Length: 208
Image (cartoon, rainbow, N blue to C red; front, side):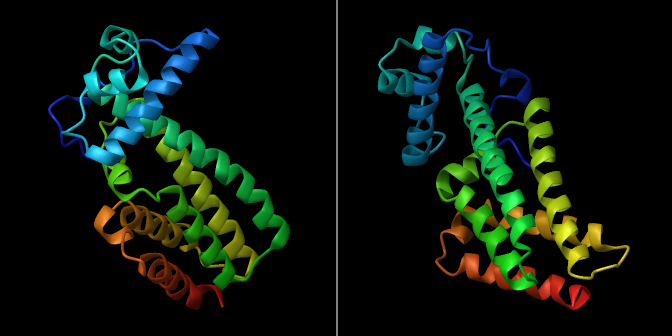
């Protein structure tokens, strides 16, 4: 589960308002771009709302129109990250169904995709520990469900008729998710290869 390691509760982390006009959307996108960069470069504690506003070339008052505090920025960056991950997964799913890879390739493709979605260790560990809003929880659950359903579909295609296949996949998805959000682990150049091997070894006997 995600944990909030900072002083604000998730109840204060909701955005103040959503941009409706194109100019406002560009402003919010710029703020999130700079927040993403600064959180990645400096970390959570060394980044302030003033830093983000200055980098985006706007007043901190303009930032506060949309984000009441730093935690709201973190949540918004996390939501955008999930949007991008969902879009990538939406493109990958039909390709996998068309290609019908064997188990080894399936594990390699999916684990590599997840690792590449989370390829900034410092930023990703921050987002993993972001304040949890109800909307963010729902998006995370949706993303996990798509991943689990896709792996179950392929395992059943490969002959896994075990009634526990869904449970095994959920355990695996949770394990891989925890590993790719461990900044120190995923920074290891061998980590992705080891995750692929873990996935193949865990699923192999039941699928063969």
